[in-house]
Amino acid sequence: MASEVIDHARACYRERAWAAAYAHFQAADDESPLTIDGLEQLAATAYLIGKDDESLELWARAHRECLVLDDAERAARCGFWLAPP
Image (tube, rainbow, N blue to C red):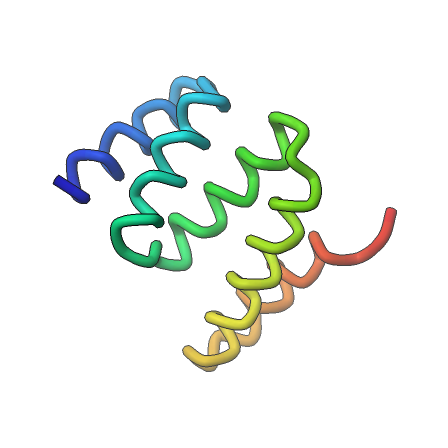
């Protein structure tokens, strides 16, 4: 079930159906925590549909996960989105 939801979320993301992608990524994350790829896509879709606070929380979560995985380059990329405009 979770893999079907994430597959559908990714398809919506590729099609730039941002609201649908957000809803499906969120549903998948509710079932089981997303991977870094999924978190980045969920954070981006949240931003694109105007959910700025949620986007920031998701980028922060992705940043923390990257640090846990010792992926400094990806952590820096996620951290970029946390900087004020």
